Length: 381
Image (cartoon, rainbow, N blue to C red; front, side, top):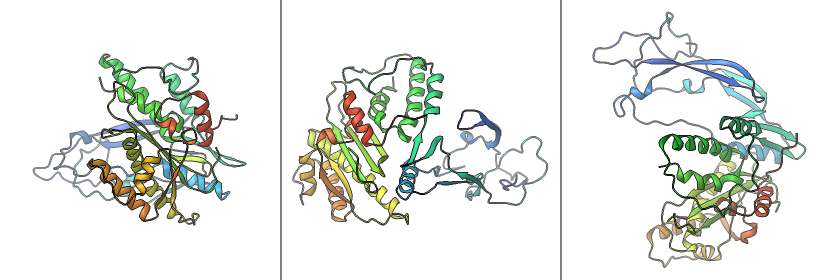
């Protein structure tokens, strides 16, 4: 009502009102205790018809890579992070469609004057469920409370810890279990995926690999660097390779991805080049993002490290002589990034490629070394 979300009107002839409902939620503090109880009145949107009641649907949400980049820059410049919250930010946008909702029970007074209200949250301690701590060397991001929560949720808090995220000796097969087990499996993958996307790049390959079965050294601080890798098909049950990339800034990883390639690669070189083009897209986006921040004065190309000399050689060649269309298009895209000074390509040995654990299961030693290089450290309580 304070935000003048609706007006009380007579229903026009021919219009059909949409039902409404109350959603109740508990706001949890970083320590897991209840902060307050919240209630929100919403429209039952699933009864709307696309193309009639609504058209485009999207939700503008901040990418976690943006937040990690800002934290890295704050650490480099020894700054404090201050947090602000726009109260009911989604209500400040203009709704283009004309929507009629049934009057909620007990509503008498029409909405009050529209306001744009801000709440000062003070020094940032939690952003999107991630705890932020100022340390002597910068900032640390922690989700230990979330890990404990999902372990208890899925009754795994007494399980024996494993040495690596993914055991390469295990041969996975497609899940032929019943619907209940499939639903539970999907819930577990979704919960762990949130952890992977926010603070744990070391488990990215394991999560990416397992999610396919839901259907029946220190670098110089202040330098944005990227690493990409691919694992050509090594599993008889798979026909597509796996791409992986990770970008570091301020001594920690700010963006990473492990994903199944959308086209079939006929060779190791092709799979590496597909991963190279994917990493190039992210490098361009990160460079543009950080370039808009006053603290960032560098306009140098993003150094993208790849362990395939063949893929680097093809990328630096003016023309691609191969016949495969999807590689030719990716060659043009990478060549354009090189020409415009967006990226530079550098060779890195496989054992020093931080993206290696995002494409395959590796030994404990390699996992630990690459994790440290990505800024992952044990939590000191």
